[in-house]
Length: 376
Image (tube, rainbow, N blue to C red; front, top):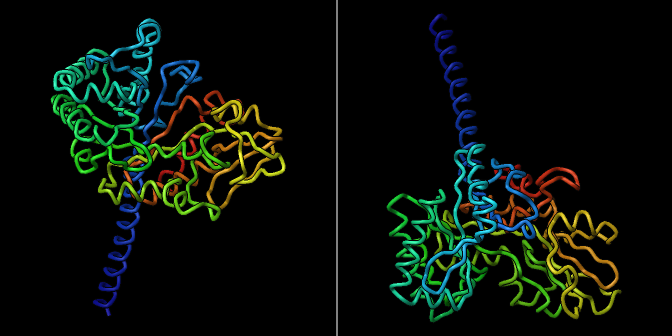
């Protein structure tokens, strides 16, 4: 009898221990998922565009801030905006966000005309100048790496784009700095995906601007899924799900992918005010062309609101004005989907377009929505 009691007690204790271990591991797994999911936040260095000084930002909501932009000159050297970056100390003020979040990484994003990028990438000397300039900026201003925003390398630029990334990676590796790049939603001929994979630590897919004044009809700027009204081309290309599938099929590793989402909307001018659904004919763009989320939540309150449950995004209309935009619900849907795909993370263009001051309610409402649903 005593032996049975002892054995029974041991079994009970082992079961209890197993239960506790399961809970602990589940908790660890959840915490690690939250920590390892990238939240890449572009921040534009102009009050007129960003709408928010860095001091208003919650540094704990991003894993990386991509400071946009440094310009590229014809010799391959990087150039700052003296008034904003130096005189107004924006480099320093953005770097100060690390005080609140020491794990935050801040990268310098580089932009320029596509023909200028092509010229610099095609020449060994100018590529070397870019690499040296990148190192100098990281050392001088405390950046943790470089982001390349070349929109868009053509077929003839494919090899040179890879050489540019290769030279940059070689230079930045000396101090373990990061190299990332932003890419279009579809892996066109200008992208040698296998080679980009070798040299870029992360790749940010710009999953927005799917529809605009160039389109024949209304459409969401950043639909999560296809519409039953879409043509076969639209279903296959003009939504986040399709873009992610194309890049994965092209060979880009999941862990290197950050799926881009917008914090702005896009307006359209309807041909007929009585036709105001998705795929309604348009005569062009509306006004303002690409309003920030803050502008939408404060200035479009009299519009008729519609939730598109098929594509998981909202739109609004009034008269001949039609607006595609994001809100907390659509950002939640996007975040949950992106997390479910086990990719590297989420990229945001751009955090200054959020309701940073909380004029419509919660401060940085869209970014907080991303953060709150990373592990759900």
